[in-house]
Length: 322
Length: 284
Image (tube, rainbow over all chains, first blue to last red; front, side, top):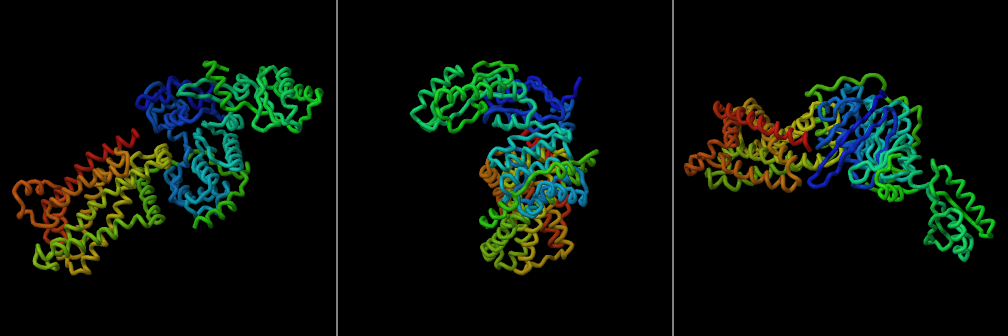
């Protein structure tokens, strides 16, 4: 039997009358990124907090590398590190003080903790900011120091709770690159996110959570194909040709076509193939058809299904086990 | 301030993660052994010291507040109660010392309440360390603040004409007892800090307890002037007991029974509120 980083069965957490987590069964293989995808309030953070031993479950079981999250909470803590939704770093302290503090708490001596802090600040491009209070850091720098703090001792499992929420695209890419490097060294990452895009870029498997339950689980490709391959956005040169283009696309793709706010633009959904790979093929045929009918296309793009679409599709069909 | 920091931000954000650099800093092999309870608590106390260094405004309550208390009560009551402020100061100073520090202990609860709301405590709670260390360290940090307040009052008292008959030994012993008791006493507010939702409610509860405990005591007047039922309360009031012990030490006339009861009451408070606080902390 393969080792699992995380296994849960029927995990439940109730706050008052709300069942924040309502029976989650999950197994996360070792040395991979596992994405937990869901909207705000779906129960992602509550689920992670139970696994990180911050909350006691009200029902069910969970293990991290075979250690029970309730019976052996101390054992779990020795394997994991947590990077929170809001930087889990002391904002009043400087970058170097934060890392030395955590290094000391992880058992490093004074000199070793200082050396380790220096190495990490260097590697994360924060040497210049080492002596500034974290409250003066930018969003991207905060996430970086947060992740640096999580790998002072390399954890076997790292919780990344919405690591890029509120970051600009450049900082987001930096965080993604860092995560990939850490995973390549053998750490398992449990990533929660609201962005399908992010889960798609990083995660090997994804569980979609809504109202405390898993409504779908699988690889990113499987999830996307289960909701259709996405959509094609077309910009015409001439707004007058839009009704004609709509008819052509509807006939060719056999799906719903909508007009965008921009008078020359329209969007057509593409029906999903087995693996979602047919999208480009369908789209190019449809575009060829437009050209053949004398409709000038200035620009086009293929869009992935959005989280909204995934959700609408999944909540429509309830139990989709890809 | 904000303009310089935003300029620094843009320059420092010019960063590309490189696999060779990051891969190299990932620690391999066994992590070091977990720190002892003492070492972890000391680290958290160091964190409290760093906080004072970065946010020196928080020293306001241990410097200005005791000065105001000492000046106000000496000159307000001195003439009426002892005939002269100089004579009254000899009686009042040990009392006002205890009262000020006892009042300041409530900021421990308030501070913890705001601190715990921040994300960093989530990280502390997922570390494989002795669980009470974060709270014990915070309280030890606060004991350093109590020491500052005590020093401020003693220095001010000396300037105003207070002369401790117990000499340096008496002063050190008195302040030492006060700090031991305050360390234990702080756990009451630590518990409320975790239990109550807002800073304001922590303040409210603290005042409700602290006002009667400090005023209905021997801080300002000799309890023999009080009605019998009130004397009964003063007799069992641990703050009054502490005042008697500290007054004895500072005045060079040791009060053995008050000293003993000070340590006993500190032990009892710690034995009740320490575990209660930890229970709440673990369940939060």
